[in-house]
Image 1 (cartoon, rainbow, N blue to C red):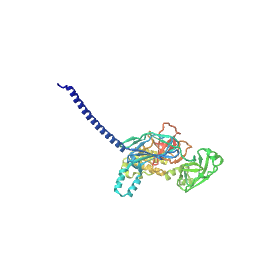
Image 2: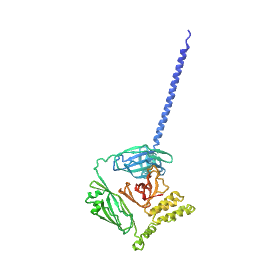
Image 3: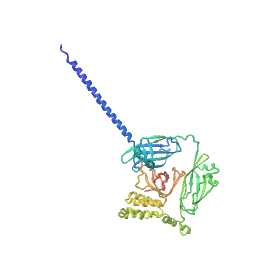
Image 4: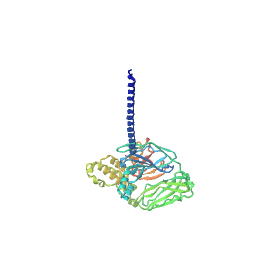
Length: 472
């Protein structure tokens, strides 16, 4: 009897199908392993490419304290790194911003300064350990934001945008919870402000000014406030006077009579005095003192001539010859334009408009090809006014918080306050000619307050009246 071939063929096809199925599973398994290996490799690459580390100090953030937010950025040249910061929460008052090099172990976040690294390498003469040390640590850039915290809340920070020549990155949004002070006896803070401070004096000239409570009702709380008396800077006579009943009712704490003997600034640092569980905050004082002019001694000329003498002798505008130096070629090519800029600035300076002269120099330093010559003249003029360590116009300040471009300006002499209020604490007195960056606003009002940051290596931020600003 002849066998039916159909079942045989079916079995053969079934076996072939099973073989193909097993072979396909092996191929899929191989592909999966390959993909998994690629994913793992990608994961390793991502870990190795950590480019921004955020650190908070101290770890426990407490209301009323100082707090530092640090960005560590994987780039070895701070001048090539820019950071666009988000708007900061109201509870975090930005006090200052610092930027510079930092040496870091990316694996654990340990950081040291370049000077510390140099000292460690000098102490260790073992080449193997030195090579191991250098393989672990890398040169990065740090940017530190110093805040004073004023509330108890959860602060929300949006993304920081980091920009380098080779890459850009945005951090993830994060939150910081501000805790109330723990195990601390509740203290009061009383602020005082200076009134009628002169901007400048001559030696032997007498001045009267007052220290007043920001809230006049505090004046009647204390029968004895001798603990607020300051120490007297050398080279000056300072007489402290207890105010009368009427002045005291208006909030006056102490009155002072000042006579400078030497031609050097009258300076009193910012003070915090704790008395009976109360913290008294007293702002700084900085009064410029000039030598007594011969015109005033002889009483032969009027006040305008005395001012001109101060401009021409005491605050002499730098000569252009000291600025040419190694820039002779560029000066000879653009001599006519350069001399015109110099003469215009000198005319403003000698006319008593020194801040305007510096603004004019900075504008041309930024825009004109002879910027090296103009920046040298401008720096020397700033030194005459006692202003040092300012930034040149070619320096980029984009690591400061900004949503829009910050305007550049120079200040007239003015008080610098912690809050936008005439009763606010005076942190310092800005000298005329101080360069600043001005935060943008959408309103225009001649009496409006503007937030500024100094355009120098200190990067101090605060508030001043708009009328004291000279934009360029």
